[in-house]
Length: 464
Image (cartoon, rainbow, N blue to C red; front, side, top):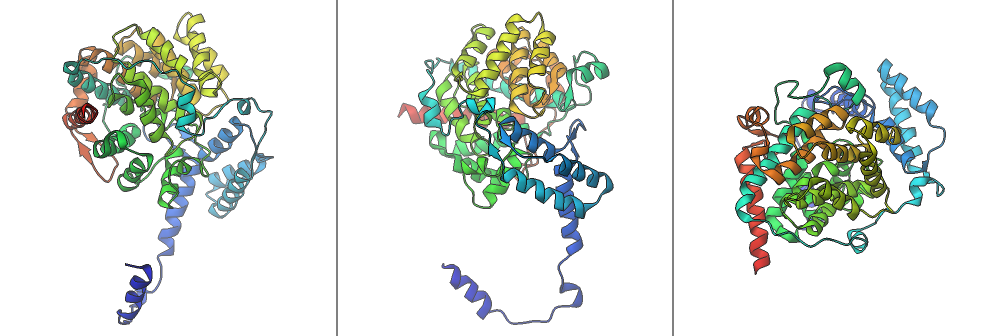
């Protein structure tokens, strides 16, 4: 059907009728309430799990400056906007918000900025050419059910334990709670960390290795009603028909935040022992919402999970994964800096102090400080689930994202026997709850079965 046919049908075949008085106007008050809520969320919100204060507008400006974008003197406007937030002056806030967004759009790169001296790969092919990938591992099929279950359980435990602490510093967490050795409150499974992994998994089950960024993006639009920072921008872009990779680049100041890194594990889980294929899948998934170093965060975690099936030394595994990230990228520099801090530090606190100081100007949701936190936790965690979680909770920043991914690594390495029942039992008595249109809930057993189905499907395809 042509569009003209449909509109002609509406015009030619609809009889007029008179509407009642209360049907003749838009509900402008409700529209304004929705607009005000969305705007206030961007300017002054709190992390849902921890209550940590956030200001996405300040984070957007900060992130652009981190990459060497010259924005001009935005300080007075930012102060004016924050004052309008305090006064609930929505008219002023709307004007200021528009001006700051225009200023960000007009920003220009400073070629002398240190970040601009590094490489940002534009596509998978150019990145792939720069990496000397290791050979695939042989993974014993009989061990997969236990290890995949432990990987997902690690993610759920990390998210549940970390969500109460995200957005706070190591010093403030230590002052308030001391060393974290258990859940600070009754745990639940409601967390955004695995939402986008579920969308990827369904696309992968439908398409196998032929899955594309667009296929995954279709699941985002159909299944996920909202996102935060980079994912929120990407969803808005996708709904306007801006497809990957532009959906991750267009008007997205958060394209190097943690949102892609937090979902890398699934890409390694569906191709156990295959680092290059895990990286390729992660790149496709990440470019929906991220670019540059934001994509590398997901690639790094995907490769780490794919290689976690190797029973070798964990520190050696970490060093191998770091070496695969090209040193000419800023992400490559960050993970190498974190590794050096581990080698020279007497304990995780000393290593984190070095990294925390180095990345002080980056938002707590940015990929860099959180990549450093992951490396420090694995290095000093002794390949032990409890100790690694204690370190991740103690470091702070985006704790739930970091803990979910790194505890998945340990689960994949050691199976469910590595996870104490005090962590797992409270979660396994409840379904996984999402904020997606579908599935609203799913059982842990279903999630594990779907992941194993994906692995087996690909093995059958490649076996011919």
